[in-house]
Amino acid sequence: MEDDKSLLKPQQGLHPEDNSRRNFLKQSTLLTAVALTPVAAVKAAESHMDEKIAEAFEKLPLKMEVNGVAKSLQVEPRATLLDILREQLDLTGTKKGCDHGQCGACTVHVDGHRVNSCLTLGIMVNGKKITTIEGLAKGDDLHPMQEAFLKHDGFQCGYCTPGQIMSAVACIREGHANSEMEIREYMSGNICRCGAYPNIVNAIQEVKEGGIAV
Amino acid sequence: MKQFQYIRPATQQNVLDAITKSGTKIIAGGTNLVDLMKRGVTAPDKLVDINHLPLKGITPTKSGLHIGALALNSVVSENALVLQKHPLLSLALKAGASPQLRNMATVGGNMMQRTRCTYFYDTTMPCNKREPGTGCGAMEGYNRMHAIFGASQQCIAVHPSDMCVGLAALDAVVIIAGKKGERRIPFVDFHRLPEDHPETDNHLAKDELIVGVEIPDNNFAKNSYYLKVRDRQSYAFALVSVAAALDISGGLIKQARLAMGGVAHKPWRLYDAEKSLVGKAPTEENFKVAAQIAMQGAKAYEYNAFKLKLAPASISEALKHAAGVV
Image (cartoon, rainbow over all chains, first blue to last red):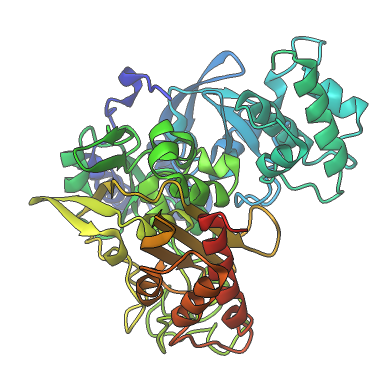
């Protein structure tokens, strides 16, 4: 995983010394509150002005490529890649299951490698290429893995399916789809509570044996 | 999750300068830390992202193999040198977590991960590790996953890593950077037992950074094995795991290394069992004797007494696999 060096240089706002902006914010809001009439101060508090101002200051720039499209965003450091995809970019194909890295529903590819987007802080993928389930199909042509999941009934409720498919594609690319045993082991990070596992394995095996590039 | 400041210092020196302040934590893969932050188990004021530091390399040294602290678990597990020299480490890594998590998790982060004791994770329960002085919920609670070796009145949690069990067995050394330069400590001395301070998992000082581990060259590559016993076949923490490495020559064991996971607050080396195997033939009988020796001093709690049988059976089984006498 080669990182784009230019994006990894410390950016403005990322230095430890920039702690001062917080103090500035605290002091300035305090001064503002003192200067305001009591009525105005109460109104400001009611509309959570402090929080809104603080939020604007606390956001950091995030540049990443999502499904081939360059994105330039402002994000809170605590925002996960999953939440950014779903809430800021409206890419709701990636699902939030457990939100704790235990179910795999949130699996996406970062620079070609599958990861749990629920445990990935968005700010940490700055400069990287993200592929979500929305990025697999080419226009109206489904990806071979999507076709295979349809053909083999690789799902029931469908909630885990985007994560299963992203993982399945990675599983073949990694070279870990050489037997049923190996597929089961390397798909173990994706839980399906409907129990569609046998059909998921069949779908992966068909794509693998078909020899189509995934 | 509580808001925090995020910084990405340019150099290792800048990282060392940044981590001295309390409330500051290093983030690498984040697979454990982000989870703990979401659950409110930990709430740092500042995260120091170190992922861009040049600590990803896996390189041979004069007498061993150096693995950078930021090398990914997935990369290490499939590295040609690791597979050739230390297949045990590869097996241990592949037994841990899921492919997605291994693509994120780093060697240093794996060492720094916290226990998965449910009482540690549940902020409504007492836990001396999370909040010193509040008591231990597990001691009289549902302690099925807990320690049978080296526990204290304060804490009976276990270290959750598989990788660390492998590295402990392979006599790895941890390389640590601090303000005064580098220091090296044996891997087995990196993690600590809970004693009266279960809140402290290891001997890494607040202002230090793990930069890598080094595994000395050995003769164990032909005869080693990692056995992990868990509630389901994959993607679960160990009930008991065993790293077994044998140096067999002329039909006799010249050297043995054994370490266990899922049984103590740190990777648990079985020194006496190792000694008992030296000069012996690699037979099931001898392995069973070694396993019994390894169990001396074991102590179970209400729900984990099954480990007193499971552990020796696992040691014996792992040794059989390592010796190729299955």
